[in-house]
Length: 341
Image 1 (cartoon, rainbow, N blue to C red):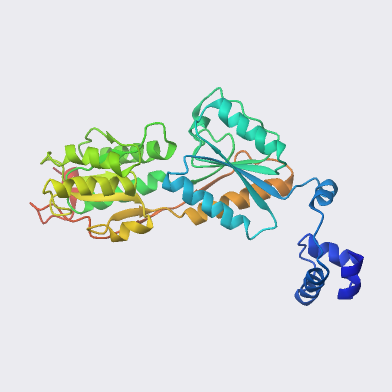
Image 2: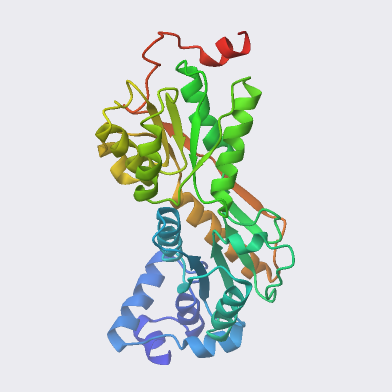
């Protein structure tokens, strides 16, 4: 540090401020110190810094099922958000959502010296008797219905209302729903909002159909839907299942959107290139990641958890070519038509 200070023409305290990414150093001085660090090969002693500050500058992330699009994108956004801070990320994946597995993940991260933990879509939090270590700040993404921890989530209900309202507005008498797994917190939120939106509009509420987020499960359900002439609109809980559903309809000779309108959820990059391009609900995973990291860092810097903090990120509807008015009517006021029937 003394060598860096002498080379840059500053005090050792200024070198320490730059090494710890403090803001009270002007840009020209900071650049001069960083150049001096590079010249002498200086690296901050992170162990010593942790002893001095009580912080390890590391965020732990516990994630489940990285094959699921939402989990993978949220993890990606968390890592991207952390890169803009002076923290690093330590990720632990859990295969089975059991209390024992999640507790072990907490303990593993605690032993690896993290300052706080983010959980992605943890259905295990629905277990009333669940007891998790609480010595660290925790943020949960899409998975804590009881709000025992600080929470960031997509407004699942609003997304479902947008999807169903769009289809009813095109003139469809009702909307069927291909839901995600019943143990999924986001899937339940979308299914409940679908049900309430139809009920509030005075529309018939058909039985929900269920898949497992995969295109294969959407295809299996689609083969059943293809033989139902009374099904003219389907809200699908994610885009992959919508892809499988549309493939099955195409193979059976049912045209999208002429015979069946389809709306997905997520707005994956490929959805614009489905045939036809998919109308879907866009989730802002980047915003979820930024909010989760910011909320966790706020708790870390404050030195205490904010268990009641809840941040909701609004979705938006992306209208493409997979939805249209029913073929047997030109009506575009489906909600009011049903209400006054």
